[in-house]
Structure formats: structure tokens, C-alpha cells
Figure 1 (cartoon, rainbow, N blue to C red):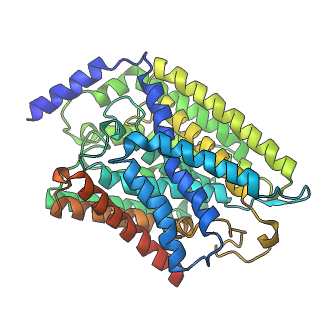
Figure 2: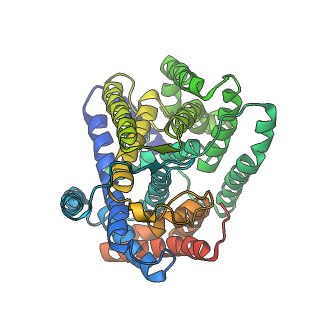
Figure 3: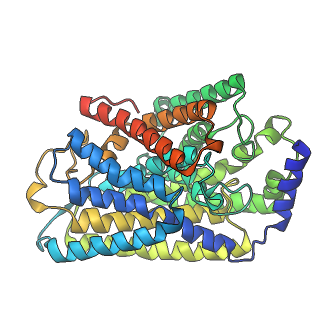
Length: 459
């Protein structure tokens, strides 16, 4: 069996044609696949915004608008995902331009230290990952959505990249050794979770794909080491502006090393023996992760350089983001022909693809939640968020993920393991898969909603 798997991986690697439209098509398809979740947030704002923030009725309606379409459209209804997105998008735009009055010319947009577009991006990553990590175990989950073993830009390839981006958006550049010491409050929990997951998986003999992060590493380890290494590297610069050059330089050197033979070794069928070889996928991706992390910190500092913006100021900023997003997409297309897009090594193409996706989402969210769906008469009301920023336009579903996103991620990982060990998802019908996934989404979201309602914040 092991020989057959090794032969398959070797065959897949040798037959990958980097100079084709495959990765380009995958990168665009993957972005379009997450549109139903985005539209779910917008519909929640339009249809549930009049309800009290912490009402159970509002939470259930939002879960119906966000969770149910996500579950259906990544499984049994995947063939209709684009049709759903097109119809709902047109309906939302027609409604907005016909019923939502434009904000007054002197309206001031509050940016704050944690803009709502960052919160929405974070919720997108958590919600999408929660659905995908269990859905992938059902037969109704499309093969094209599964993580790529070598080169590719499938839907599930976005997960870890978006987590790195959202972590960078809310992080700061380390300025001294003292700042590094403060990292223990954020890095150690991630490493402990990573170690706990590895130990539990080993004890219960739970299957783990070694070609994802390696034999012992996992997403928690990768995020923890990325934050630690990124903070250490940031000591090399004297200002936030210099982070851009540091990130690009580090990404360039990372790609050079990959092209010199590391990428071929990581994707080969060499046995996972010895610590480095056994964990070559995760270890080889770290510097690409760090480059994306530093790039995200730089972008966050640039975006929040002013606490408030006029309408024209916000439009200029969004035009700049759109320009960079288009440039990144062009680089993605070029990379798919030259170096390939590989999540497993966090190659140049992959990092630029994730950054392009993130910038595109920020522009979309800013259009709806900053320009079109913000009411001037409620801007002065106290927010539920702990940073005091105006936030009344966000769905309760998003707020709960914002307050306890890591908790939501851990719960989804735990329940995924429980479902796999007890319900045998690989042999479930289409109807059973939708029911199980819907209950799973309800439980995961329901726990963090109750925590939000009680004012409990863990992580």
C-alpha cells in the first residue's frame, strides 16, 4: 500500500504541467467558491441588522443565511455555486442602489486600529475552514476542492494562508527584545495546541496526511513558529515601512532556495524518516509563511495609518488596494507558468495568490460594509467590541468569531475528529452529509455565540 501511495505521488509530481492554465483556473475558481460566504455576511447585514445584536433569533437567521448555503454549495450543490453567487449578487446590488441612500458628502469613516474589513476577512477564514475540514471527509465534497499535494490552488489550499494573513493584520512589529518576551502569551498557546494535537493523534492512531505539514507538525505549529520567526526578523528593520522590503526580500530568497532543489525534495516520494525529512513540508514552508506574515503587518499599518477618512480619502485608499490586487493577480498568473503555486512550500506564487485573494476580499467588504451599508445616525453608538470602535454593521455571526475565533477553530477540529471516529462520513449519502454538516456548523457557531452573549473571551 505504501509503495502504491509513493508511486502515485511520484506520478503526480512528474505529470504536473506548470506551464498550463490549470493553476490559473484553480486560483480563480477557488476565489469564486468562497463568494457564497461573503454574500451570506452581506445578506445578514441587510436582513437581520434591525434585530438586537445578541438576540437568539438574529443568530439563527444569520446561521441560515451563512452556514446553510456554505454547507450545501461545497457539497451536493457545488455545481450551482456560481449561479447562486451571480443571482444573489445582482439582487443585493439592485436592492442597494434602489433603496440605500448614499452617505452625506461630509461623512467621516472611522478606520480604527482593527477595521471591520479585517474582522470580516478573519471571519471568512474561520467559517470557511470550519466547513471544509469536515466536509472533505464526505463523498459529496468535490475532488477539485481538496488540498493539493504538490502544485495547485484549490479551495482548501487557501486555509492556512488566510490564517497567516489575519494573524499578521492584528500583529505588531517587534521593536526590541522586550517585545519578543511578550510573545509568550500568543506563541506558547499555539505551540501547546500543536503539541497536544500531535500527541492525541498519535495515541488514538488517527490518520494524518503527512504530505500536508509533515509527520509531527500541524497548522498550530506553523502559525506559532511563523509569529515567532516573523517577530525576530522584524527586529532587522527600524520602521513599519521597511517591512515591505524585508518581506519581499525574504520571499525572493525563499523562492530561490526552493528552485535550487528544496521544492523537488519536499514534493518527492522520499520516505518521511528523520526529523527534517519527516516534517519537510512544514519546515520548508516557514519562511514563505513569515514573508506573508510580515507583508500583512505592513499592509495593516498602512491601512490604519489614519484613524478616520473622508469619502474621497477612503475611495483613494480602496483604489490603491484594488490596483495592488490586480497587480498581484497578474503575478499569480505569471507564477503559475514559471514557478508554480504550491501551498505545501509557500512558494512565491502561493504567497502572492493569498495576498491577492485577501486584498480582493477587503475591497469587496469595504464596498458593502464601509461605503454602502453604514448608517450615519448610528456611528456614535457604543460598540460591542472591546476596542471601542463603531461596529454596529457587523453580523452577530461575525462578532462571535471575532471574539473567540481560535476557540471556534479548536471546537471544529475536535468535532471533526469525533464525527470521523463515530459516524463514518466516507459512507454517508448526500442528504446525511448535509444534515451532519449543518448540525456541526450549528454547534460550532452556537458555542461561540453563547460565549459572546455571556461576554466570555478565551481566544
